[in-house]
Image (cartoon, rainbow, N blue to C red; front, side, top):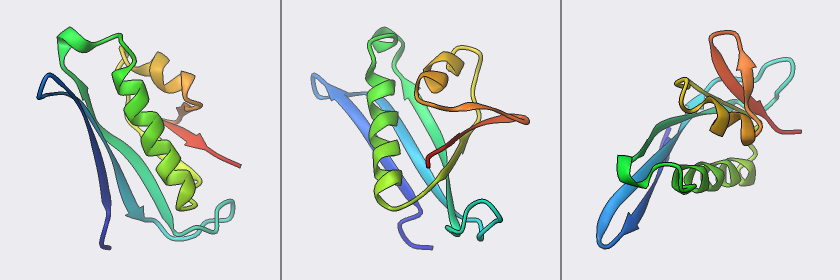
Length: 104
């Protein structure tokens, strides 16, 4: 599938300070979702001296907006204990071993 990864970076003073990606997966339609494409948030990283300033939140919000534009309804991710609050604030909830966000 072409265009299967959307990556974003944040820059300050000509340096990359954060990044996040959205991996598009050919999943196939399911009973609850006729869209054959799902997504995973991956590669979210913020340079330590830029953490807790909303940079990663902004990048992930931009990725979620792009997913919504192309009609993706199910987005999964793996989280760390440090990142769970961020993802919960964006609508993700615990789902088996990972977290998932669904739009309606």
